[in-house]
Image (cartoon, rainbow, N blue to C red; front, top):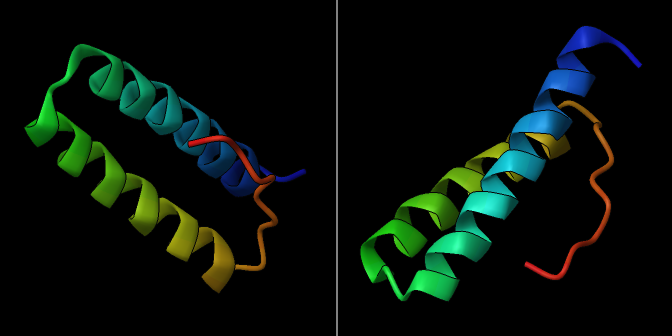
Amino acid sequence: MDAFTAGLLQRIRATETDLTRARDEGDDFLVEVEQAELDDLRRLAADHGVEVSATSV
């Protein structure tokens, strides 16, 4: 796995964690921010052929 892929997957995992935390805390604004970030990261992964495991987020 190259550095780009590893870094991207790490950012996705961190954002998923942050999104879950925002949901648990009931912070609707932060949920929107984190969801948008996650959508962008997943789109970037797809554009570069990086396979992202399905998660519960």
